[in-house]
Image (cartoon, rainbow over all chains, first blue to last red; front, side, top):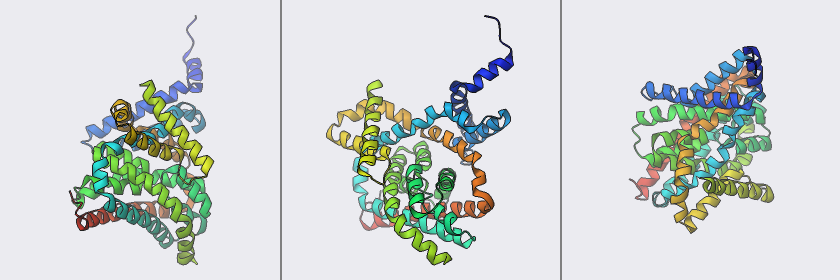
Length: 245
Length: 116
């Protein structure tokens, strides 16, 4: 075999899922390294760093997202099995969860309603209207449910998809400093609240901090998906009409 | 390892079938989580068996959101002229929801004697 010139190798690589799968793992490893090196500063969130690195890389190489996703889909696919896997910490913490049944239920209701009402309320106060405002309503819920809810209530699902991810990253970044500021030391409360407010990305962050917090965050995320799917279609259109009508 | 993955995928698959078949408002993997949880309650030995796989997966849960995050960067223009208002609403609302959640949790825990 004669050696190929670099341009040819690049042409081959950019078509190959292997390149973007590897790039995703490398970017995340660098993000994780930066997070540790920074003394675990919340703003140096590994997801945030990895996303920024990859976005720049795609821009510089002129790679469309679809081509990137051909490789990255293998990582993305694991979200499903990982969600199922949340049952294990749930089961391991069963005694703790059972003893906290009422606080959990109350915090779920409070967090879920606050997330929806404040998102729509603050959005309306900033001059948002109609479809845009409705797209904000399910922003704290895990993406597949949020998209369904957005469509049901008359929002724009693609806008909701973007808002959901930004909410997750926001929750993952602010949770630790915010809760430390208010001296909240109960891992159950911290985890549950973050899972309700910032779905899977918040849950992922909770697992990095504390295993009990992670287990409670997983429950918060799962139950909020169910609760928001039930209450948003009743609450959101009414609230939007009330605030902007 | 393979058997453990089969357990996870089988739960997810059953969850997807149930979600679609019954028209449930919850995604398949969340129902899969409930199914695996039920399986663990029925067969506690399963927990020890799959724990190495699941804790490995959950330790790197953040990584799994990276592809979706990269997708969002390309769609930031969907925020359009409302970008600042949307981000402000997201930020304040997320802070409010987290605080409402923890405070209500702690208050009810105190009332029901479930404090740590």
